[in-house]
Amino acid sequence: MSGVNPYIEQPEFKLSKQSFQVTFQPMGKTVNVNPGERLEETDGLPGSLLQLALDNDIDLDHSCGGVCACSTCHVIVRSGLDSCNEATDDEEDMLDLAPGLHPQSRLACQCVPDGTKSIIVEIPEWNRNLVSESH
Ligand code: FES
Image (cartoon, rainbow, N blue to C red; front, side, top):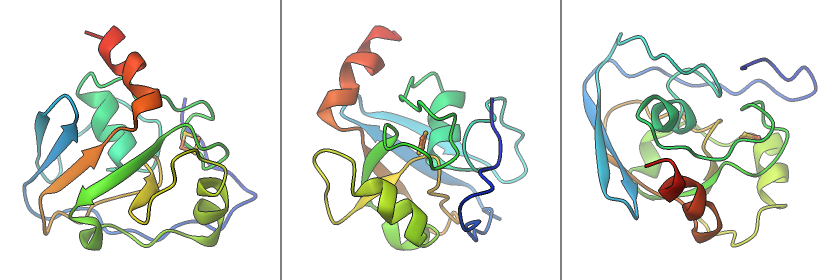
């Protein structure tokens, strides 16, 4: 269940006004995102990579429910990162706890693409078993 973490700076983000695609690797699943489309999953920020993954049956781990209080939703945005909102200091602090940190690492629950570019997201190896078990 989604919620708001009152102990963190609330991130700023813009919702997409145009259609775009997000490809999740390594499974190579591409999802189309259309502006105004109501997503069923509510964990993570609206329009976040976590919400897009869950809404498309990609079972990305998210132990805190998508409120920037863990690092289990760590992903690497391989392409299109500059079309996503800036990470807050709180997100950066949580990311520091994630294994396999990369310059393009983000917390999927806090990362919201603005739709101006296609996105390629890599789900790190330690999270892949969960992904494969969901299919
Ligand atoms: S699910 Fe906990 S930080 Fe994203």
